[in-house]
Length: 432
Image (tube, rainbow, N blue to C red):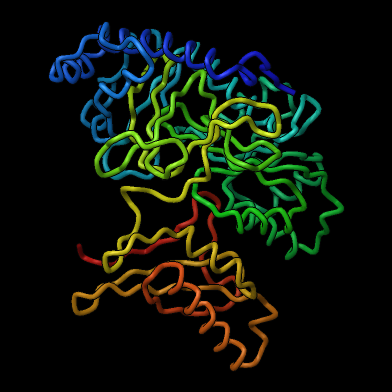
């Protein structure tokens, strides 16, 4: 087990003292080494010496993803390229990607926070970890890989794809921990049943799932289908990759490695820092990163923070599950809609599979939301009346939760496209 007890159980006053020291060093570094930051601070009349206390971070300007694109590829690096030993780039964007550079020390920090994440699941050097995240420019696979190696576990670097082979090796190699997206974990569970295999043939104990938002209902679905503890892991390429925060076995919030990443919650409209416990947009400052430090990076992820000591004994601040995005959430007829809300409704009702898709169209200047829902095998063979009742039940529940009406279309089992990476939950056909 990877257990950094002095950090993971550090008192609040001592942690804030450590964060203040590291924040001041980071601000001084980016001011001196990165023209972009120096220009932004000078525009606000700020000098590094103005950052004395932790609360002074609120004086500093935010950085957004567009700033990274504008400084493509190396404009935000704080060290010469000769000191950069790894380059990653974010996925899922059009045009040129956002680039991240790591020094050797940065990679060591990344491995450490990932090793912590694995240990939260109960993993030790005796564990066998199967990594089904993609390897390459995407940070998921390699970040998960080096953390597992630092833990001392046996690593199966299988990457994504070829699900039948994934399952065969999972059984034969005695995989105890699975790392992949939650939607792919469900697909693996579904395929295990199709292959006529039984969970008793496997050694799985836990899964660390991330890279896409997922609900507590989906967590319960995964745990039931795979017979494991399903933990949520959070990270983003711009900050370091996976490992910024992760659930422990208490499953009551994700522990942030706040000795490396200082979190804030802001009002996404005004930019003001929110009181503790309030929902808002997560902002992160890297306070130990050398290659490409980010100060007050707006993640656009909506969550909340909790500084209470966890039942596991760790004092690290916890963040709630991601509720959605402040920038790319669906706005339908003036109402904010998150796919995770729809997912939670569907899984609470039952008689459906955990596969769905939201289709948004505009007809006569009116937004129309259609929710495509796969029914399970038992429901599919039921009478038409039963299907009509289920459709009506889902429609009523969605209307209550979303506060807008939605069309519901029940579709055949396994008719919606499966994903080995991030599930494509939304198709927005509006011309906005």
